[in-house]
Image (cartoon, rainbow, N blue to C red; front, side, top):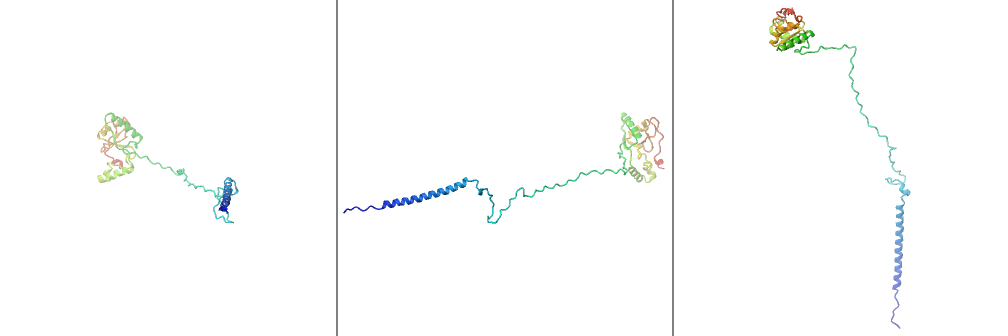
Length: 238
């Protein structure tokens, strides 16, 4: 008899364990390859039918239609902005040819010779130029007057002298006044009155009233002597 023990079955069991483990690992590897291959096919297949379908948000339940997508063909036409109407330009109304045209007499300053008659204005300007050559300045204090102004002066004279008869010695009514007709002029200063009374006849201008050394009218032909003085204008008023 010997002391050797029979060989243990350790090697045989280890071999089986390794075989089973290898099979499991191989299966896992093969499964991983299959899954990886499928994903790789999904990535490479970009033209699949599913990719061509539009993605529509919704429940996805059977029978539900996806909402219609509005395009330029289905949208209503945009309304044009309304334009504010502009007012037509205003035209001036034309005058009615049947209506008479109203004319007004131009208004002149009382200290101007423009309201005098052409004859009176021409003679006064010639006399003024001659007086200036002698060193005398003739200033107009009152030439043509309006009817209203003459009436105003007459009322003031009546208040001053106490009666109409006394007032018309200095201020005549409008219908008798040479000033209203543009045929008389009152001048100043005193040196101009003296010069024109002495030399006015050369230009057809004469002092008319004894009580008014400033009042001159065209009473004669230039170069001829003036008529005698009147006491006042009372005789003109009647």
